[in-house]
Length: 433
Image (cartoon, rainbow, N blue to C red; front, side, top):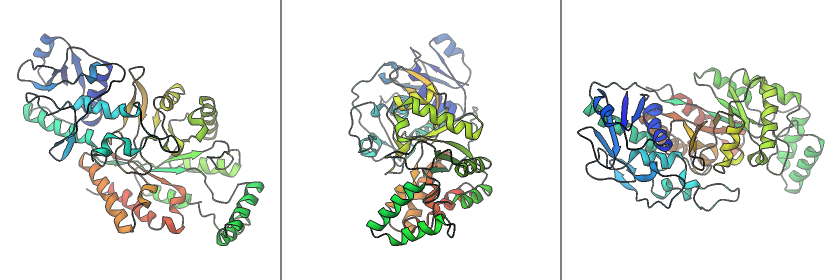
């Protein structure tokens, strides 16, 4: 067991240390404010204070983990070997910065509580982040720091054994609508046809007609292909179905349609299934509760995981609503237009509520790439290159890689050409040594 001495044990301190030691390095950690207990400890000892007590591993503490609320932090990012760091410390410290304060800053999404410019959907943009501005968005820096710190601990305590952890994948399949043309109802079908006609999309209009009369396969109905890939993978895919009411933002299928319900049940036989919230459920807990009840009645089980429409998060309210409804996992944390590590980690972490200064039971699984982001890269070869680069970063720290694809990504539409190959590349990455 690792024992940490500090002058004051705070919720922030415990949160940061436990992510590094318990979740990434998989070793137990305890805390003490008693010097005698610390000295008597016969295993790994770390002092987290302004001055070391002896020859233990010493991290000079930044004030962040002993504060409450938000403050105007002056952050200077510096190089540390092949990565970046901030909250630099004195030369006496075992590492050149406060690894735990920096970890807390990134995981708590401290910067998202501060004033910032939002996009048209009200989202925090990658360009506003410390990671993007300082060129470390493409690295899981928290995991990298943890592994570097592990090396320091092993050098001073060579008899202490760390468990191994392995690279994993968790493919996300987002389903805003299971079909392009089927089950849309008469009014929506007529409206869609008129829209195709007015914009001279005669091919789409013809396809719509053939699908409706049953002579052609719906282009967005790619579930047979995805489930076949699932059967060949040891890692469970996680589907998120939108079952909210039709609105300006959400144009899915009515959740009462038997064929749609049968599809969800069929997918749940092979994969894990969660709730893709409607746009209006993001702000209205009553709508969210109704959608939660709706999908639980379809699945006949308690809902475990959610994903918010448009990857929109309003911290802390978005996550508080999930905690209130006892939803245990969320997969919204990530950027639609940039691949990378929004929270600086590829290890799931618990949501810390900065307003209430408490660690909550909600586990955040931050995604690292979305299919839309890959559209920005021109050739299939270049897409493979950038995808392999981010997979490599996760593999270097034996983390969990989470990509987000949509059901329509696997259609034969031109813009998604080659994406089946990219998805297979991700699945195969888990089989490589």
